[in-house]
Amino acid sequence: MKHTSLFTSVIALGLVAFGASAQEYSFRFQSSDPAGNPNFEYQVGWTEVLKEMTGGNVVVEMLPVGTIVDYKETLDAVGAGLIDGHICDTSYWAGKDPAFGLIANPVGAWSDPAQMIDFVENGGGAELMRELEDPYGVHFIGVSTPGLEAFVSKVPLDGVDDLKGVKIRSPEGPIANVFRAAGAAPVNLPSPEVYTALDKGVIDAADYSVFSVNQEIGLNKIAQHPVYPGFHSLPLVEVSMNKAKWDALPDDVKQAFTDSIKVFQDNQVNGLKERDLAAVSEAEAAGVTVHNWPDEERARFRAIAQEEWKNLAQGSPMAQKVYDTLTAYLTENGLLN
Image (cartoon, rainbow, N blue to C red):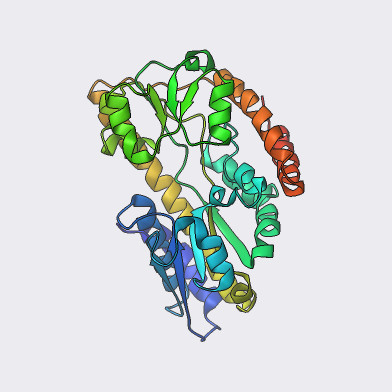
């Protein structure tokens, strides 16, 4: 996979800006994705872009999930200096403060990756992430996402009313609460059991992954009514590193990190979108019926989800701050309509 071909001019600008710094830096970052996963490939591509932008002076070794610590332990590991940084879904820290879960994946809030990215970069999200993570000795640098997760279903789903009584595989917590409030029957199953559970009729639908992944593992063959684009889940994937090490970096290196993460973000979002669209065409050619919810049904689901956002906001002062900032952004941009 070629990660840098579309961004030659960006890298060239980075090299010009970086030229004054001669010191070499080496870091180890751990991913929450396994080697071979498309997300991990894009993360490795980011390290290549950063290295090229800095003329080889900044080298990041990207480690697959579980290499040094468990995926739910990297926040503490980064703060302690066991690893220098991580790329992972921020919702993993929801047990530390419900604010992490709310900012990471406010169920139903986003209809496009660009909306979430703009919230982080221009709507106060980055400042909230730094306020949340600084006490752990971790500095939030930038954001990416694999995009809207598609929804796997054996039954036609064209709106909120169709969720009633549907047995849906969903992780415990906010998203299960929202599905339950919408009239569905959430079932907590580990991801390796989803295919068999769908095939045997234990569940009717599943919150699983993006469309291309669902297609690759055969879920759409046994559940031929997927919803795409998805309506429920778009994870915030953070790129963060040890705060003391970040603070010690010169400004040109910090800028190179920031610029290279924007390239990574564009590569991942656009690359996976292309994979999804190709997978949709493949699925439809095989007789799969792809459902796309109209805006009014997405708004109905979002209205149900807002009650869960309010519940999460009561969990801590920071969760309330995230809720206030998030809903202000959504309101100002007409995304609660």
